[in-house]
Image (tube, rainbow, N blue to C red; front, side, top):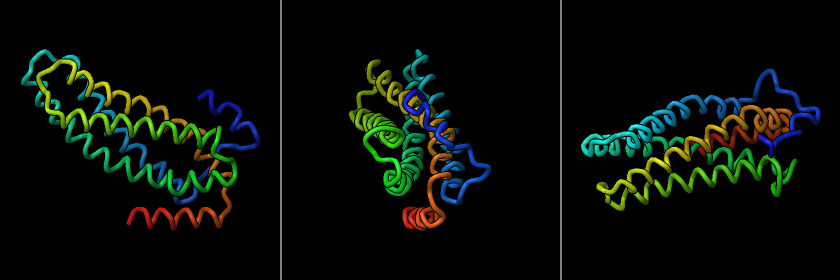
Length: 181
């Protein structure tokens, strides 16, 4: 949060309501959080399990959960990166501040998701370090995105609601429609 200190103190109050595209992003967070919690629970079970048969079942479950999660988080991230962030950059820049932090966190989460799938495909289910590494990637995604969502909800989305013009909000809505197909 320290990267954002002072952002809301420049006359930007939390809005009473949000435009449709920002509301859409906000409403995507709770189901994504449920999926992240399920992934976290699977990772913790794997880390704590002593039975190889339980680990194999839990790994398969975690893999399926991650596949579903990746589809949802990729769509959510695309809306933010290709539309919202780009629009906000015209107002606040990209080099430092909220957009730089958001993009860095997106990148970190994507790296861990990619590493999870790369490691999973390496087919070394017997090794303890293999399962520990998979669980680590899941837990890093969970931690990164839990903090990330909070920053978006508390700072970035209110900032966007207050700074974007009605025309920009309509443009954002149209961009989201194109992205969602």
